[in-house]
Length: 128
Image (cartoon, rainbow, N blue to C red; front, side):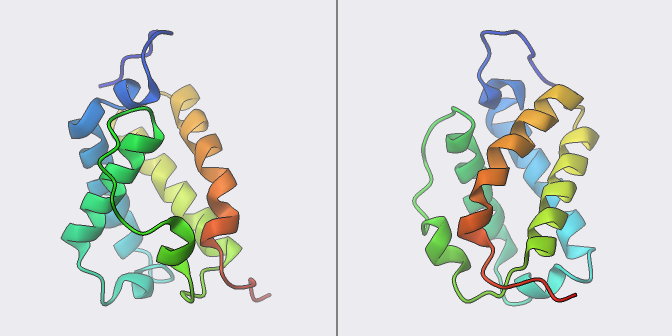
C-alpha cells in the first residue's frame, strides 16, 4: 500500500486519499469499540467526522488541503479529553496504520507528527 521511496511525501506513503480514507475508517472502528473513547462521539455524525479527519490528515501529511473544519482548539474545547484519551487515540491510529500495511518507520513518523497536537486536543487532567 505504501510508497516508501525517499522522494514520496507522507501523504503518498499512506496511499493518498484512498489510503487515508481506509485508515480513518479503521481508526474510527477502533475508537467506537473502545468503551472509554466511544462516549466522546455519541452525538457525532461519524460520516462527517471521518471526512473531516481524512481531509485534515491529507493536508497534514503533504497532500491537498481540503480541510475547512474548525481549528483543533475549537473542535476539542470543552470536551474533557485527557492525556490518556489522547494516547489511546494515537495507539488506535498506529493500529489502523499497521492493519493497512503501513511500515513501522512510517507509523512512527505519523505518530511523531501527531504528538505535538496534544496541547490543542487535551482539555482535561487525567484522573488517577
